[in-house]
Amino acid sequence: MGHREALLAAAKTCLAEKGYARTTARDLVSASGTNLGSIGYHYGTKEALLMRAAIELMGEWSEELEALIAGGARSPEQVWTYVVDLFARYHHVWAAQFGVLAMVEHESTLRAALAEATERARLGLAALFAGLDPAADVERAREVGSYYYALLVGVMAQHVIDPEHAPTGQAIARAISSATLSTS
Image 1 (cartoon, one colour):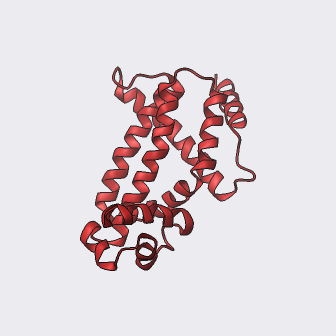
Image 2 (cartoon, rainbow, N blue to C red):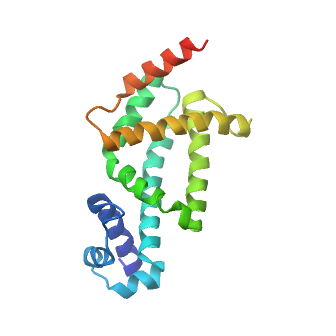
Image 3 (cartoon, rainbow, N blue to C red):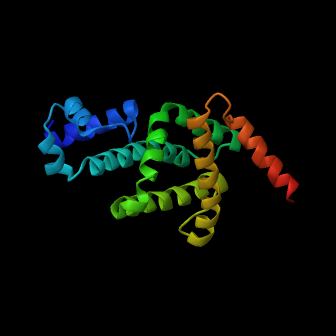
């Protein structure tokens, strides 16, 4: 494994163990077995390296969610239970995302990468939860997907902040059903 790959692997590990804000360049060098100059040579800055690692980790989480989407129809409770289980397995990824989000205003490259990932997430969530085909009506899929994206991020925040009291998949499905019935 070359320095570039070793640094990226170390950044993923450091994000999981220390979080975005507490990871130093020295942590990355120590975990990767490289040198400080390698960070600048391969990624430009420590922040760029950590952002790349966070985006890749989120991509891994997204791949699992996309596999669920490709797997066919499931009940809302099954889907939300799976999503909550993914939170538990990828807790470190979601916790790191909060640190990355704090950087978005100051990093246009990160903002662009996250905007692209958010768009894919919206459209995928519209397909998963509402059975919408984004190719057939992208605006409707984006609108419905935005709702589910907001719900997903809110649930994720609860699991990061207070996992003991965060909602289960069953509770989320019941709440959505109850809200839908009360607005009909």
